Length: 375
Image (cartoon, rainbow, N blue to C red):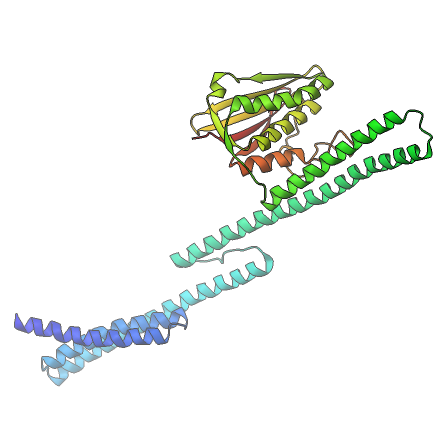
């Protein structure tokens, strides 16, 4: 038993010495290629085995012949191990270089294509992550291009919508100044109307700029859905009477009143008001606009919906409904508006950690605002 312990101690001493030298070599060569590191690791393993074996062999006082045999066997094993490690390292380096070139092309062209052929698990995982990042960047670029196009359309439409009333205001002002107006009071009323419309457009632009800049300030408070919808209905009732449209409130009884939400009352009333005004303007006379509320217990959310009788929106336009500047038609004159109302709706709802959606229903479309229920 004592001999076995001595042999183990000799082997441990030789292997430890070789391992310490290998660790020092790895530290000095840590900035070199993977092939060099793999070769050093293989050399450390073989050297540790060789040092331990030879230490034990010398300690056992083997004959010179036996010592030569042991040394030769260990040396041949070391040569084969080092050669294998070197070949493996060159293969790993080749795959790493291919991935580096693909990543370099990614930086130039903006798209990544993983190199063909097999690779280690780590390199394959890195390639998949780069491919996923490339796809996300492409989606981001698509959104940026769509946003730029939307902004250009918005600038063109706003320029037209501002130029038209300004030209009318100037003409009415000149007519009043020249004293050629038979009914000045009518001109004064028209100037007031156009001024209010321009003020509304500027207010919408300011609100949208705050949303895009992330500076929209909210003052949330606990409110019942019943009060929230009631305020929106009261504000839209005069416009509905003017257009001959019926406003209907559905599911607004105790069930809706018993599910509170924590929102900024002023901003959320504006959301529902925009949806109702949009629905009324696109619903023909004698049509019906319905606003409803329900509680989704599975997700603990409150869903507010506005359903109109506009005849529906084309499938290709549905994804663009909440885009800035989208108006659903090629019209450039009122009452088409500047196409900001629904963009403001989405911005305010998302600021409340909710979402706004739209879908076609029989005879029209339904806009839904999903908000988290108050705890």
